[in-house]
Length: 201
Image (cartoon, rainbow, N blue to C red; front, top):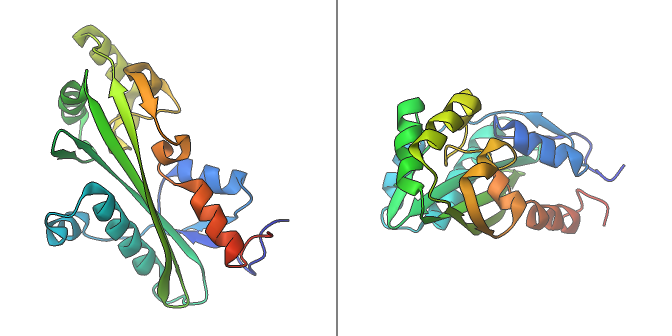
């Protein structure tokens, strides 16, 4: 076993994909979602770029999930999406997802994922990474069929798509790290966990 800590990491996320990535990489986790006011943190961040906002959100989630268990290692992550100066959030319903995907169609957007680790009462690691994704100029008919087939999954990610599934059909070009697109800069995180003695080096 590669994991050296006496107990699994706490994952401050409901994301099944993040959990699967960590467990597949040999990091056992227990899910402990964090309840934070994301919009308030974004407002307090003011003119900070999307990468910094993602890092602030990840750190806030890690701290919140670590309350009451200072001996446990907490991993938290967050994503932001920006396109031509506009910041996007998870769509609230199908209509919002349609508007969002129509706005991104034919354009290149920046998706930033950040990860933070909280242990022993402090955030001990932060990392943010960005990727650039270009959506193809798909038809309205395709968009509506995509929304029909993807269903509620379009509401689970900041972009309204899941690249590991049908969402790949929306794109013509992707530049960057695959794990970052899925919502977790995995390689830098694993490097930190090895350096800090939580994983076998």
